[in-house]
Length: 284
Image (cartoon, rainbow, N blue to C red; front, side, top):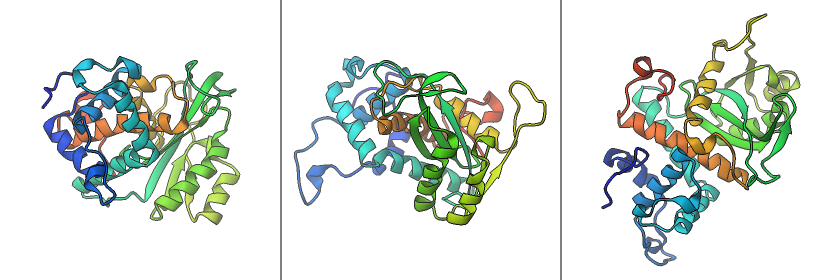
């Protein structure tokens, strides 16, 4: 077994959480297939190394013992088949259960973030955000009241929050029928509120900043998702978007939150009150 060398590598406790959530190897299914040549833990560690350090796929250290093409192949396949999102949802449910909450949230918080795109990003992910004056993708996040992501969606930045909200909320309603309430800022106000109530049976509550406030202000409910955005930006691959496919951008964001959740579950880090806002969240 490869020795743990980098901060992004999984510990034994983290791997014990992730391994059962990965799909069964093809060689163990009825359809059959060739046995996998490389250990999955090395592949997961290499993916986490790319996300945490923001390197190119070709620059994966050789000591992982896995060709970069193999690592990228598993990354793309797991993103395409929904494996990464499933791992995220299972870990979130376990975190909520440990705090005596229901496995699935009934209330969420919405927000978006626009980041700059590198020259490798395609037109499918980039667009010009006139409000932020940024050319790149826009990330739409829905988190529970503890800050754990429920859904991540990446669109071109030219698409407004109101337009993206309909797709995001529709997908949330289909995958999480237990949802009853969502909090968001004024970018989601207007016809979206009545549309969500009429067509999705979902209460969309708008939380505004205090009048005449300047700079950063801690806004009730909304601060939770803003804190989550700050967490995922600590993974250097997420500071700027390099992807040609939106689902790959979503996968990088999700892998960053998976690392946070596994570390929280294994109690490797202190609670937020002891260290600051960059650690894993507590709450509903």
